[in-house]
Length: 284
Image (tube, rainbow, N blue to C red; front, side, top):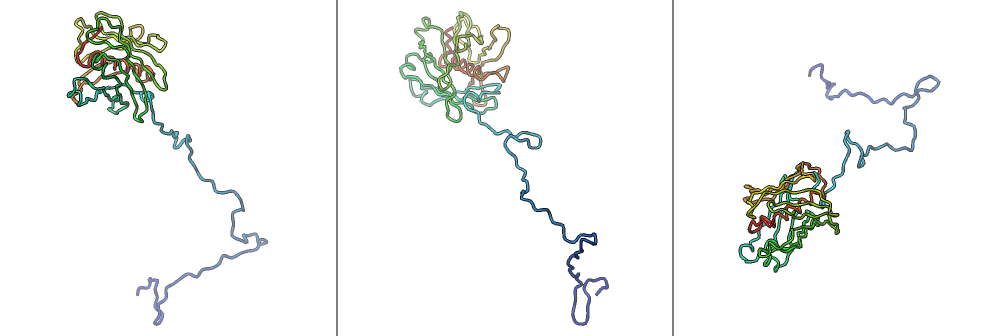
């Protein structure tokens, strides 16, 4: 055994060096020293617990609860909107076209709305793509966000006698946002975007068409009331990723009021039926 070891041999028994416990010495108060162990004063107060409530600042940043957007509020902050048609197999098997279906997407590709047409079989047979219809646009919670109504039937035979095409844009529970109507023009495919009180908000200027036909890829300019500032574009382009055409709406101001964006969606659907469904006939 080494001398520095803590275990020492005493005869035949081994002992481990230990320290004896000693109770604290208590002194009297008259000796000017502490007479007892210090204890905290008695109190009925409980120890405070740090809590975080909604709205308080945590590490300098406010806690903002997530609120899912529904209805036309989904359009808030969107710089572009893309409308893609869902083709039905029955269209290739039947002489009468079916009611159309569409997906309305954001620029990121996220699906914002689903649009479904409601129209009668007779109007689809007699009027073709000039038929009257109601387009129900629902958000991802299956709540109706917009309703588009086109009331004028304008078949190919009666095209010269038809009034200008118009679509109404409604939002639940039955509020009229405004109209999109075809403008009086012999050489251009132009439209007016109107408020519910018939006040003109924007003009939509399309390409010139002497023959009444439009190419499959076309752009329309959304102009301000004074026709000096372009506030958006509605275009139909070929999307190579999905191998089909899509109708695109671009806004120069992504913070444009969602009601005005909704009117642009109504204009895009009216153009889709007038120029790009079936024959590209322009009834301007």
